[in-house]
Image 1 (cartoon, rainbow, N blue to C red):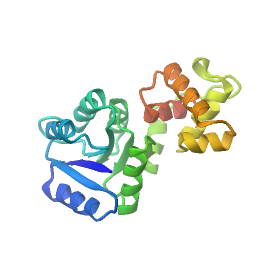
Image 2 (image 1 turned 90 degrees about the horizontal axis):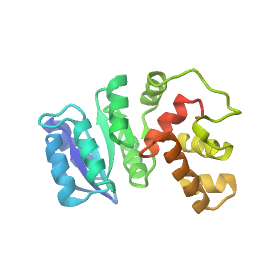
Image 3 (image 1 turned 180 degrees about the vertical axis):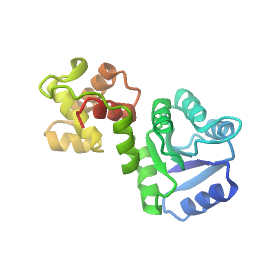
Length: 210
């Protein structure tokens, strides 16, 4: 797994590079001091994941995430920041980040997050997830009538996605093929106007489907 680290604080950036370098199966291919450097490193190295700070000079983390997801969709972004306010969380997810961690996350949590991101699975810090639910909360809709034309099975799949299950795990739980799950996921993205799993999960929480 190839990773780019982006953080404007030298000590934090170098610490993350050192930490990730001790993890088997992970190669740090670049370290950026600002968002524009992160975008340039992604274009040069095509990493699997970028571990992205938010508050950086030249181009901030949300701007960098937007550019990376638009021009290099195979690269996932996991935000690692000190900020856990509603605006930062929602802004990062809307920009296309698949994960959001605060900087008190431990070594194992960071490793799980980047591994999940590389596999296309969303990972949110529990405290971040709680704030996200409050930030995007709406009056719950009836569970008997899924919103936006979702079928009952699509709502069920979306609920399992919100629990962090992969397509393969969802297929096993529902006793269907993985191809069937992928079809449901594509329909979910289209009907909820979600660009990726992180946005779909945010939608699930807004509509009490999680």
